[in-house]
Length: 185
Image 1: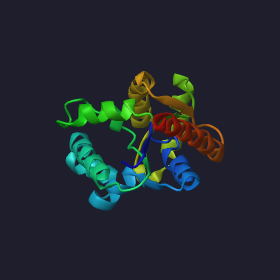
Image 2: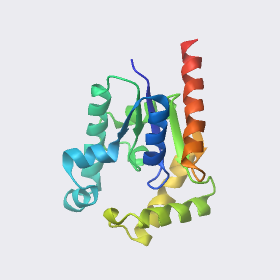
Image 3: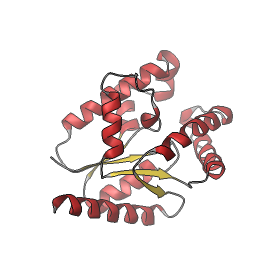
Image 4: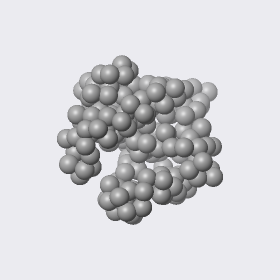
């Protein structure tokens, strides 16, 4: 089976930017789940407005399952920001999917900092700069404050994403290469 690395973390943590750099460095395919959602189901904010967050999360789990089935080569996947924080009953197979992502040796959690307040402020500022999200400060602050503790409880490698994207990409590349080498031996 081809290697499949996950980049997880909140919106604004740098998953898409770093994932693209990392895929170039490794010569792997890069997949951004948010872009896949947009391509197949349209604007995420508008989908949530029409159908609700629960329906969005269910579709996102289905999209992930399809992506995993279709993968044919080494892949870097930027997982949607809330994916690791969905309620466990959102979809029948979601708990096992979430557990596998968390336990995978190629999963990297990105956060701009591991300090709750600093991370919250940085993420909110980054998210508000994205006009297509139609976000507001109160909602973005609530999201990161709800999700930060969940992310910090995950048992996977953590990387600060507040530096140069190229340097972070290099660091995660080294992590992936080391993880792959240890599973090959």
